[in-house]
Length: 330
Ligand code: ADP
Image (cartoon, rainbow, N blue to C red):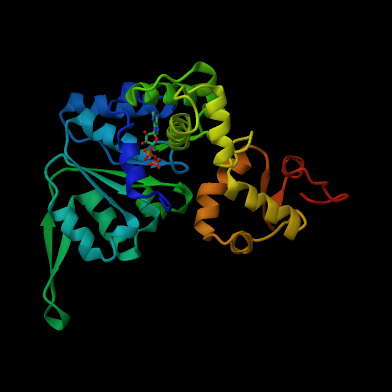
């Protein structure tokens, strides 16, 4: 993800569930996945390719790791943007071991030639390796051992049909309910060997934007606050103060969320306005606004996606303490 620094990743890795039964929530996807895995295990074969879609921080990478662990298979991790040329992908594919799980994060960002190579490899377990340059170049087909691609995307709709069709299973991850996030932070506190008070856990869970990654991050910030400014106890007061310091409001919205809503209401009179114009107004990349900010604002009823652009819902004006214009504003 953009903005996720390496130390933050290490802290995150320490909190990852390792088995399917430790993975909180996402009942539907978990049940579907366990059938795919058990079915394949029963047949003694590699399972079909799997695609996981949903907003960042909901557990796609975690599930890919769990899939490999449940299969007892090695895991190779890479991402669409990391593969610059088809040759990079050919190198990865031709070095896969039998049964290996290849996790491809942000698979919708693969370049076209790599994408075409990938779906041939997924379908026929074959890759064409180009040897030599210019007129003398020849393409040598290379058979691959059976392997399983686990793709992750924030936008399944963006995948071209030929690629999407190669996946035997597509799981859609949705935002978590507060009770589920409460369970996530409860388990994380145990891993961190912290005594998290019930009310503090509830507070963190209800302000984590439906996202386990954010819930765990808030938990660590509350721990910092308790240690540095408080008396070391992770109680409701520590949770409230830490959330105030980090500018997380009572609906769980952060600075960027409020900046987007603020721009929409103040600068564009509630819209509708095009996504890229809105992104420029808050100084962010279009993709960041589209994948990290919008889904939650839409789901909470603050923002509307209309054919003519993004518009502020009445709740956005209320939340910002603004008066909605007469007969407009979305
Ligand atoms: P994504 O790949 O979808 O962006 P990750 O799999 O990296 O999300 O999840 C982010 C963090 O959130 C992980 O480090 C993990 O600790 C936590 N997490 C995600 N989903 C769950 C879950 N269902 N149960 C417990 N923790 C979770």
